[in-house]
Length: 434
Image (cartoon, rainbow, N blue to C red; front, side):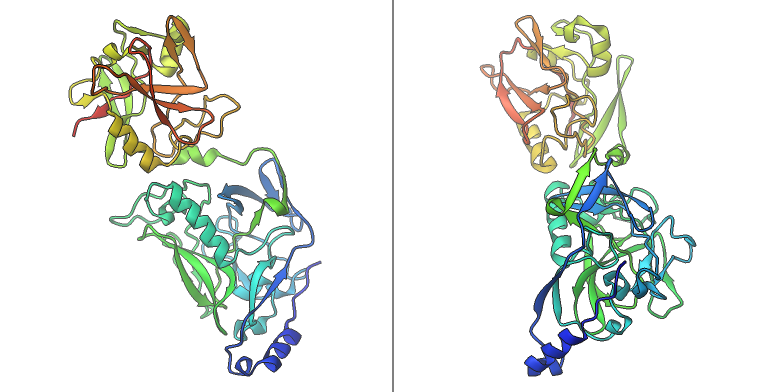
């Protein structure tokens, strides 16, 4: 059974030890409040043993995050929740948006700490979270955002964290992408007037375990009209969402984490028709690429293992001479600089690889930017090789003496440019002429 932490003795000692404690500016003392056991993630899910509620989990950087807002509400087991947690007015059962908690409820503290400072800097605070999980402090939020900012192509960390649906549209704001599975829903907030809620569809607010002063604590918020995830300090008696966090040293897990969110990342594919065949196109970082491998039957091209079905799945493989002749009017074979620019923005090979089709030894393909690189392998000297383990794309060689290919394999984190005989056969992607 959970108990309310009582810090009266701690505060009294802090005040007695320092005159600054009397006037509200005591030096902070770091304390740790660990959970009683390790977290368990089973089959990629967290099941809260206290009430049976199930939550998705995403690993973002080096931390595991719940992908839904907490719904725990048992005020008998945790008296700090009584009259301190609410469902949104448009979500009577808290099933869609989760619960909204005051900061003291989130931290499992007595209600007096809505206006009384703790004079404590938390490192790990279980609060209302299940055993092995904790309310994230400001540093843990910042660690997650640093990872997002390093891997999202500069789209704005708020864009990367918002759920793909449920957000009101706003001019000049990027389409929500949920690129890392955080699934931040526009759940609004209960204001501390006890009567009004901030609109769903426009905002999401999340507590941290870090106090600012007597009446406020730090939090983070998403807005429908901004691309960034923003820090702030909020009245402790606001009702805001809680996302629990844990790490490798505190968790036992089995099974793969849910990656179905990858299929829902909006790519807004266009179409290109070439001799009766339709290809997808994608605009990544201001440049329009074919998102499928060319499948035009010309001299100097083959299906992998001479099997027609492989052409339908992976496109054809071409010699460099054939590759230079097949891009339609208004399109061209990419140059080395085009691929370098793509990699600089995309950040990793996994961000360019297709979600499915790679061998089991490969890390998960993310297809973040719609490039959807399939492991089509290649052909050299009459032999086929590397199906399901590598994708090779011809580069427009700017010298007749060099033949280069852009190579994405199953094990390296960054693609590379390799030199190959021009008689080898690889995939072709065309790029739109500006």
